[in-house]
Image (cartoon, rainbow, N blue to C red; front, side):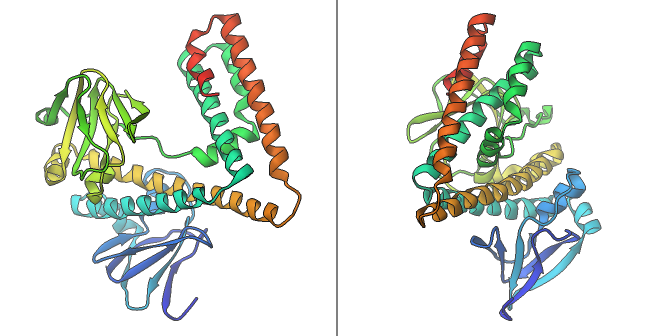
Length: 352
């Protein structure tokens, strides 16, 4: 390590504290090839692993290496002080803003590296994600209906390498859901069908909690998702970072939403103390899964480099096998829709 930097912790080490950055910069190495900087004054650094281990009870070593600039002013925050601090608004908002920044910056790394994928590696990623999404939806239908014959087909594909590969590319922390307190009823707004809740590329300082109805998510004028789960939190990144909206939200039907503005956040948290805490936990998990994604994409980039150097193109045969497996999965689902009159599986088939 250069004398220009001070090592705070290394990847896979035991997370025994967080850090308080009074001033200066912390450089986070998401991989040997990818780094980003967190700069500013009075920031809480290294929260992810402490939250995962001590508050979510998921054993997690350090997921990144962190170094401080030589002129940085940094001091340790013990695990005990960190946990007690998470009960106060000022500590929570600090930790959540830093985590949101880490999620934003690691998202940019993922997108940059994905754009570097070419040819068969790119195709491998796309097909793996398609396979994962279809099997994931199959499993969701089984969990909803508990039909033995549906479990048979899920087990056939759920443990496959194709599924695991697609999961690594695609997995992210699910959107959090929060049950709004009756004390927040004054923040609820009803949006008629077709009305715009917020627009892509506009500044946003509000966070939304879906109460009733459904919301279409549009990017570039195209619908990419529909949100219909009561209590789903949307827009926490925009609220915390004052970033522009990444999508347009449109009411699919008459929809009631709790709208929370940044200036109202402290007041809201006094009425519902778990709201910001749950947002912070969710951001820590998103950061964790982003690091896994970076590792997965980088492995594909290495394979691409080796293939371009004239080595045996293993990816080509993997793609062909995956195409064959997707065909088998599609045939199995089509057959079961016909034999069991399982019309509810048609949306799964459309994934393929």
